[in-house]
Length: 256
Image (cartoon, rainbow, N blue to C red):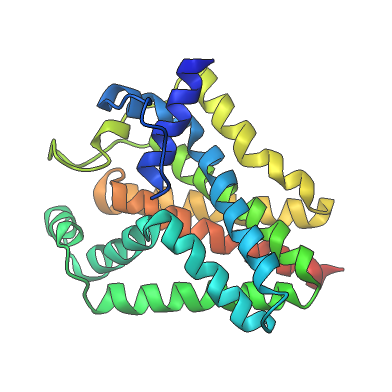
């Protein structure tokens, strides 16, 4: 159990800016096995987002509370996944062949595609959450608690199913480039889908379908363009599937 706890804290320290206990050892090998807890990290980030939303909604109008809550979660993660989304937009939008795409994504500067993509992603997530707020404070909190774990499961599924395509040994996601065992995948899946129980059945179904559809499309697109995934593409998948969950919940409302 201590080893599993260490793996969780390893994942938490890698995927967020939250402090972890000093007694937790770190190594590429441990990070390699920590991917099973990526969706559980989503529980923490989603909990931070939900708690900040519920507190801020007591002080400010929904629009302001949503934006501030998003800022809190972005601060907690260090914009880790947003950065991946922006880099992916730049690389896939501006690159022609595999080599060019990978080179552009590695550039720390943000270009036109990345800027536009990041702005639109943040606006879309904010708009979706503001619409969810019309149903009450609990609706936004539940959506955050569901979307963060499920979207991280989406990224984890790419680690398990696709090949890592960067040859650079210093790449940040290189230690994660290992397919999960059946037991590890079961752990990740459990933590990723369990929060769906917080939603009504139709909402849970549409949210899951939306996340699976986006992840499946992304996987096929990444394979077609690059032959597999990179760390930036994992972040991009998390962002896209998080938005898909919000939109899936809203779509369920339109069906009822």
